[in-house]
Image: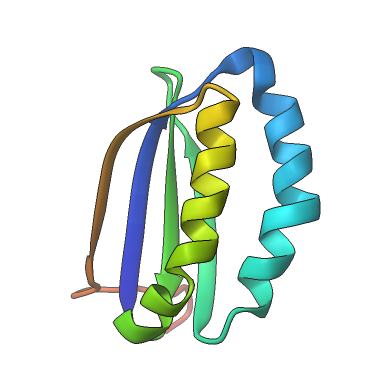
Length: 98
């Protein structure tokens, strides 16, 4: 499994609009992408958000990279500034009940 983790300083004034656009424009593409496993968005107490996207493989994550970068430019336009991004193989992954 492969993960892409992105932390952004969120623009609170555009948060609702961003979530609505993500639900209508980005999430459907992500859900249809080959190898997509899951997405989680964590709202930190400090106002930052952290997105965690899991893929079956690095190759599948890379195949979606152009689409993800296009969405990233949309987020940039809404004032959600990237703080960090990391990518890598998942070395431990726990699932409830297993």
